Length: 122
Length: 180
Image 1 (cartoon, chains in turn cyan, green):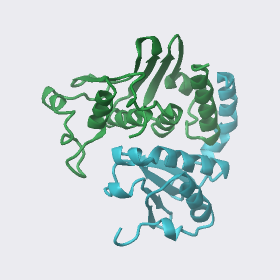
Image 2 (cartoon, each protein chain N blue to C red):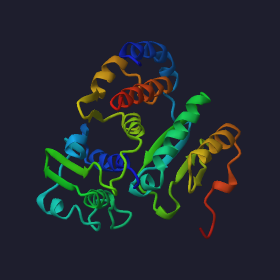
Image 3 (spheres, rainbow over the protein chains, first blue to last red):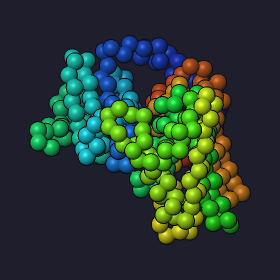
Image 4 (tube, rainbow over the protein chains, first blue to last red):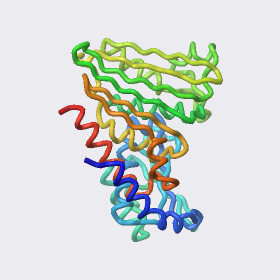
């Protein structure tokens, strides 16, 4: 069983890293729509898939946050990726597998997943 | 919504928007009484009488993107479809309390679902809010208070990967043990 003592040990280990991660402007922001529409469509699992995949790959240049209704409920779960160069990418109808793909191809290799992006006429 | 845990995730968001500093989530499963329920209590801004009276109406919302708010109506519907009841009370300036109860063995009762993910999501994404999570299954219970964890962590955030991992496993093990 996991114990609170382990948590104290994690704290010691993490303290030095946390200081290095304070600069937010140069980071990629992943924003998941978590209003009723997003949650009903599966946004919770998408959000957690992003967090897990990013942790697994040790990407300390990415932060995952959530927002309310992005306004296109029929395309939920919606995920917006903001890159430090000022661009925004809107991914639609996301799921766990698609989240892993976006992390690997877009966040790591800087190749946006064209097939998952919002298209005209959707 | 396919799971009670998703309703919880959605409704707690209302508490966060109401500026709550402390949110208590209580899940109770009592098979001998044929009841499963969840309660959410917050110390947010609360609602005045008029808003509260209309809050179960899907055309009542505080959001500005459109004039529909489905969180509470969907939960109330889920209760009523499963032989249960939905109750909400609020005091402006003090906070809001709601309870959703369901017949445990009703065929249309939604499963509790992945409650661990709901709690993990709330704690890691809402760092500024404190949560008390209490989950009771018959005579066993599990309680987690994020204020105690924050004291141990001394400023290290919950979304730090190692901390999040620990929390994920800690929640998973403790919730699972309620069913053994």
